[in-house]
Length: 152
Image (cartoon, rainbow, N blue to C red; front, side, top):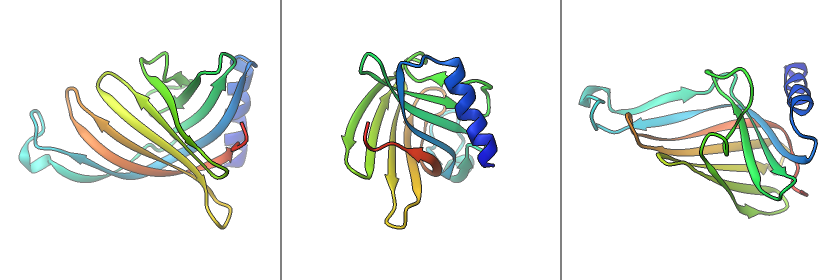
């Protein structure tokens, strides 16, 4: 598994600009999503469901112009997609010695990514989402990180 992650990071670096700083590389978030009873979701399909982005990967970066971006691979994409290129505004909300929180604001969705190092040294992240549009949903998922650079 570590070889796959290393390959992902190296492939990303080889195909992207070397003028950005990688801050975090994380994967496989899982958790719960809530679908409200709002058309087209029928009442019997609304409520909480388990969800996961199996194989999902993300890299949080600081670009040479000082702006932040979150690059992601989900079940639909084969190569990294820039949150900025996808219409998002990426804002650093908080940075400490062992925690980072980032807001990504899209036209029909808001996501908050939080990265941390636990007291026993594990690197983890969470995604909290609120999405509108055709199907509204809100949720929270937790995943693991291969690295987090808290000193960027």
